[in-house]
Length: 596
Image (cartoon, rainbow, N blue to C red):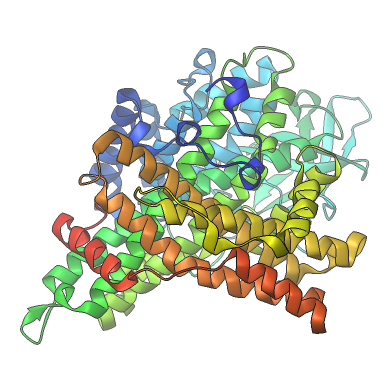
């Protein structure tokens, strides 16, 4: 995509989506597919057969597997070639992350290492720091971790940071004192990116090695899930960190923390893509083998409907995650990592899509939670015991809604960032909302003529959902003005509308591309997945919008607002049962996710 063709972050609410601007998994190049296959082969061949041993926190085995992954280049897609990596695009990283997403707790080890552990040095390290640390991290001979969270700080990790750094009298070291908690890879890592406030004021980042005097890691946490990963506190007691290990600039640690979290969010979304598909495969396989009343349970309507809904979630998750990473890749294209201004430019580019990154994290983690829950239900009592993988998948999934910023924090970020951009004039949201409110009472949905083509009605309703977001957000902004930030219940509902609108449109654009390239018959599964998901989602969004408006007005004013909303979201239900039956047929025939 040329620069002018790349939509800005959040702009999807204001402009019709174009298939050419939406990267899909079907657009992967031969090189992407080769990397993806290599990653899946490694995970299935080397990791999955050792899951039982890995669940016992076998550090020696983890190190061996990380080194093997490094030899294959699976840890260095984001690391520049001159520092031992492959220097590939973000889509390459996404396909590797997707593959590791099926690896249970090992996916957490690999994800933290390649993401929040390594990327701060990739983006913000000077050449000396990159040359010293990145080759070993890309090779997997050393493991990385990220120390941000503190007791009592919670989601306010920057403002609540109490770890302090003071320059030594001889000027050679920063002396760190404090403690970090819930650190992934904490007991195993060799290199840590740690945040502290210089003189208690300047929030900054440091590269800390395990052998530095005054550093130690605490006892392993006893966790509900991801038991095979290491999670410990980090303890700094007059820890001596060489001054040359200050990362980036004093007082600019928040640039690193917030931007790396954005990357972590879309990478978490990519990991859930692999998990969602793998668990759907597991459910379909079990349902085909489990016989009740003389028939495999996959033949029963109740089970088939579950599989169809699981498939819809997996499809939308895959669609929106590859769309997001495609936008980031397109915006980063042409940037020189060796340019001294690269860290700032890359940070600004990634930050441009922080709304989409949060959507990826929230939708992906909740889609996976839905799928693992239904998988347990399909397994019945067997899904509740450790003998079957369904039980571990259920436990492992739960953490995804907590780390990389809780889903509540990410939901609040979405409307907050949209309003911030509107106030700065970066997104023309308020003029669009004001214009919509002036036109809405004259709008007559029954008069809209739609083209005679597949998904035309769904395309229209997705555009109406965008208008509904602007309508509800505009009413809320007018009602509460500067106090809107305190009305979290309304903001959460606006966020849900934004998330689902982006998901529906991502699936729709993917289906449009499939229709154009494959024809209607071969693209039928894409069309059915989108139609079924939209059919269930529109009424739910209407209810969410009703709740938000009821908080903003009452009496005649509320009645008028609800009339306007009904005009926007006046939806004719489709035959959802028939659509889901058709989807279940394909899932059953393919033995799982049908679009591999």
